[in-house]
Length: 389
Ligand SMILES: Cc1ncc(COP(=O)(O)O)c(C=O)c1O
Image 1 (cartoon, rainbow, N blue to C red):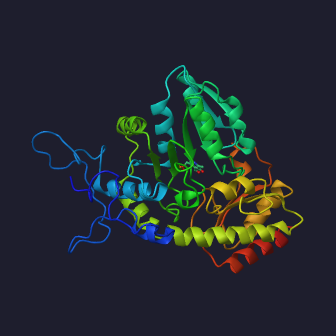
Image 2: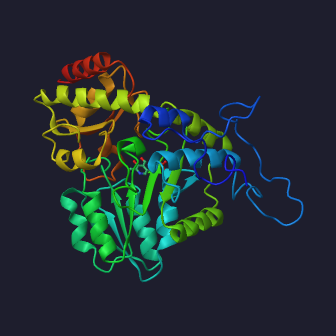
């Protein structure tokens, strides 16, 4: 098999110690072929020519696709630079990726530990796991509280920083404790992106993410991935993808790969502006509960600075009332009132409108985009003034 077209292994060799920008622009590229594009276009195929014995790599479009192969290689290179023992699998969405790990690894009678302050679809997953006879224990992300409920668990699920509260836990400490008890560890790396944090290096068995957010960054693709270093566990995840069929379309996979080329530019710009915005918000008396792991006095900063390389593009804060928060969102001109996060266009929302998070009515989750920082901060400060009443 030609390594440039198969598996999620590593393709073109990068110089040792290549920086994030270099790795992002070259991630997953195949060996150059004369007259072929640098990044081959999406391969639209439900089936592939397959005379004789049905051997891979490409047989049927629910099992494998060359466009996924290149994207999987890119994701693997970003989550685990230089490691050939790590496999990556792409999925139709972040939830498909999360479910593939939980439902492929857990059996009736097993116990799993989930965060109680994670992404708001996790309680739905919890209900589903319980109907299958799986015991679900929950604990908050902050203070490594999941440690207290680990005994006898088969899997520990970590989301750090947590969405939307932006609490951070110590991945290395939790992974060591979980492994000592025989449990596998998965980390949702959505908010940090693989440039901001590498859970596999911190000891996790799986790094899982929604690629819908900053990884792809344009608000136009739903995608998820699982990376892992335990071959047996990853085989079960792959089997789950085949059974459930939660696969990305070739167009989405290709768009995602193209977008990854600018990941470092976007992460650098957006995350730097997020810090600038958080600093500006700190000066405002109507803002409480301000959270950004990159702020030196944020409760998450100490652990975050040890295990993260960059602190994400999401800032959370609370305005005094629901009405004030709604007026603020209405007054913003450069920021769309929309859910999700990580895109090049700033978005913000009153998170309480969904009803799934334990947050105050005036809680705002703000996703910082790639606008000029001065323009964005000015827009936010003006909207705060105008919404005062
Ligand atoms: C931390 C986190 N994990 C997973 C997901 C789910 O991803 P998707 O919407 O791509 O299914 C989200 C979505 O917001 C998220 O914020």
